[in-house]
Each structure stands twice: as C-alpha cells, then as structure tokens.
Amino acid sequence: MVTVDLFLKLPALKELRILAGHKGLENEIRTISVCDAPDSYKWLRGREMILTSGYLVGGDESLLEHFVMNLADMGASGLGVKKERFFKTIPENVVETANKLDFPLIEIPYHFVWSDIFAVFYELLYTIAENTNIPIKPDDIEQIYNAARWGSNQLMDKLTELFQVPLAVILNNKKVIADNGLPGVNTISGVLEDSALFPENMAGEIIAEGKYYITVCPVSFARPGQLEYLAVMSRSAVFVKELQRLFRLFSGLGEQNNLLTTDRSKIYRKFILDFLSGKITREDISAFEEFRGGEVVYTGVMIIKDDESPEIYNHLADILKTARMAKMGKVNSHMVDNAAKNEAVVMMELYIKDPEDTPEIWQHILFEDLEYYMQESRSGFVSMGRMYPGLIDITSAYREAMEALTIGQVLWEERRCFLYSTVSVYNILRKSDISEIDMSFMQLLENNQAGFSFDGIQTLEAFIERGGYKKAAADLFIHENTLRYRIQKISDLLHLDMEDPIVLHSLITQVKLWKLMKTGEAN
View (tube, rainbow, N blue to C red):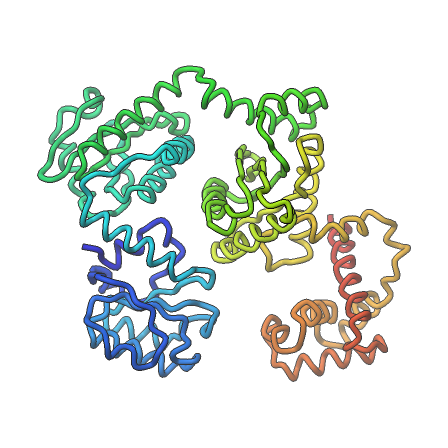
C-alpha cells in the first residue's frame, strides 16, 4: 500500500513539503489526478492524491479553502498545490482548515513537472505490488559505486531511488542509525537482533523472513573511522544475491589498486588538485589528455560552495540525466571535496551532439534548472567558468568560476548560481581604472540619502532589474505608488528620463560597479 508518508519519502520528491494534515499521512493513495476545474471533486472515487496549479480557484483563498473541504469529504488522500503559479505561499486559513480535517496539504515547487510526479508514484506502486525480481543494470552499478564513495547515507538514498526496497544503516553492534522509511524496514532490526550471523559471519548469508529476504553488506567506502553496514530487504532472493555480490566486488576494489575504478578516480583527483594548487604544467595537461582519451569536445570547471556539496552534486547529476540535457550532449563529471574551504570543485567533460548547439546554450539550460533547486534549498552557491575546447585552458576555467562566484554574490544577492559569461563584463570593468568611469550619479544618490529618507541606489537597482514598478515594489516591500514617487525623486535629482533604455543601461552598469567598488573598500 502506498501512503502519503511513503510517497513523500521518495528521494525524487524530497523538495515537496507537507504543510498541514500530518495526522493523515497514513492515508492510502491509489491513484494521482491533476484537477484544475472547480467542480472536479464531484468525480472522485476516493483515495486519490490531487495535484493543482491553483488555476481552478484563480488565486482566491476562500475558493481554495472550500476545495480542500470538498476533497476531504470525497475521501481524497491529499492535495498538492504548486507554488508561484497562483499562490506565492499557501494561505494560512487554508492550512488551518486542512489541519482541522487531518487532510494532507502539500506544497510543490514551481519547477516540478506533473509527469515526473506521476512516474515516480506509479513506479513505487508497481514495485510494491510486483516486487518479485529487481534486475541490477550496468548503469545502476556505476551510480551505486559513486554513491558508496560518499558513505552510507548517500548510498542508501541512491539505492532507494533505484530499487524502492527497505534499507537500514547498521553499526557493528547491530544498532540501526538510519533507515529509508519504506514499508517493512522495522522488520530488519528485529530479525538481525535475533541473528547470530551479523556481522562476523554475514558474508554470503541471506535470512528468510516470511516473504522477504534480508542480507547485510559492509559499506567499504564509508568515511574514515566509520564501520557501517547496509541491511537490505527484498521479496526477490535473486536481487539480494546480486546486491551481495556487487558489494563484495566493491570491497575488493577498496582493498586493491584496481585501474578500472580506484586508479582512474585517483588520477582525476590528482589532476584537479594540481590545477587548483597552480602546480599544473603544459606537459601534465598533455599527459592527462592522452590518459583520458576519447573525444572530449569541451572542458569546464564548476565550484559548489556549501556544507552539503555532495547533495548538490547528486542533484546536478540528476539534472544532467533529464531528457532536455541528455539531448544536447553527454557529460562526465568528477568532483573533489575540499572540506577546509567548505566547497567542492567539479571538472566537467562535455560532448556536444548537435553542431548547432553551443556549450554556452548548454550551460544556460543547466544553470536555469540548478537555480530552481538552489532557490528552494536557500543554501550555498554554484558558479562556473566558460567551457573550453580540450584541457589547455583548464586553469582559466577555474579562475573564471572563482571570479563569477565573487562578483555574483556581491551584485545579485537573491541568486544562487552564477555563470562567468553573465558577469564577465563587470569583471573586466572592475579591473580597469575606476576613476576613469563617470560615477557622479551614484555619488549624488549616496550624498542625498538623508534627503530621500530611502536608499536611492537600492531603489534604482530594483526598478531597473525587475523591469518595472509592480515587481520592484514587491521586492522592496513597498506600495507601487510609493515606488513611483521615489523614482520620480531620483529622476528629478539626476535630471534623467527613466523611460530611456540607454539611460537605464548606463545606470545599472554604474550601480553594479559602485557595489563592487564599495565591497573592495570594505575588504
């Protein structure tokens, strides 16, 4: 049985957020429907998870509240409402009503595609109903291996995503320190507690428990100082045995110097560390180019600035697998985590499929999706330099990624992802003699702060960047008429036409350079 709670624990849906109706998390979901007609609840059979953009109520809070009440009456499992389309946030009165009815109310990020939600739900439903044999495909092995290198939690998340089987992370004293919450996972700890097999005699053994088979695999790539095991439960004895053999292979690779995996990873890691430290030479680059072989058309460098860089890296990998990205080209990525600097550096190798596509287009599509994800997490930053043919300009790509991060954080406080191609003009200007650039308008605005009783530079920046009064007023948390009054005051002071695009272009350039200059003075 698929419950709301189980549905929300799927790794692919981890960005969905339960707002109300926690007592209804055990509601069964038999199917999912999208409803965008006000009377669509009349044709429900019960136990449906309903998704909506809010179009059916047109942003009317009271209508949404009544819709929730009608869904609860019809026995629906819950309601997922997409943010930003008609509701920036779900209204409090709707949340209160859902709580009173114990009716699950879920917030869905704007970028989610309905078909993606349908796909993971029906995959889970099918897996639970027909879990008799789960094949491990060659592509799965690489994903499992890469996840294992980050430790047990990342490995558990990846296996849950791939196979939807109950999993638990266990220490050698049989203590369960984490599980994936899927049905039956509580059985694991009870079975192992009564078993004399774990951990010393577990290798190659499988415990049968009713319809399920359980085994324990050592996490050979756990972080230093950790001794952890992954307990796996499945209805398929074949799957359990396959996974067991796979972990024995991983364990062997951890002990041996295997060129296929360990050595190749080490060589990539050493190359990245060398160019980060500035020790790389042209001879080193030529040797590495020969080593990696193949037709790598472009190489780029990405910086992930965050405590949870592996999580962001995994999300990046998921984006690269989407149909839109895969259609443009194939990507190999290699990450080095630098905990001391709270960042990770990713080297990306891009094979463009269509000659009419460019790496610049590929980068902008990638960062568009990354920005959605990073805005939801509100943690960390990602930057990237330009993509270069071959490897000869790898150090330039890294330097540009660093500069994009530095400039982007100063100039666009609300953004999380920065491409060098979008900030390069400011990088060039900041390196020029700033005294040669006319900054008199910014000086006037700063000198008149007291007379304005508002921040003239901040107001001007919001007005130009947001392309008009309504959006800029919302960003500044003021009324639209108040903003119009302030822009008129700025126009009168500067004697400029605020509807002239040439004037606006000049002003926004000055604003950005002024901010960079002030940041430099502060440092």
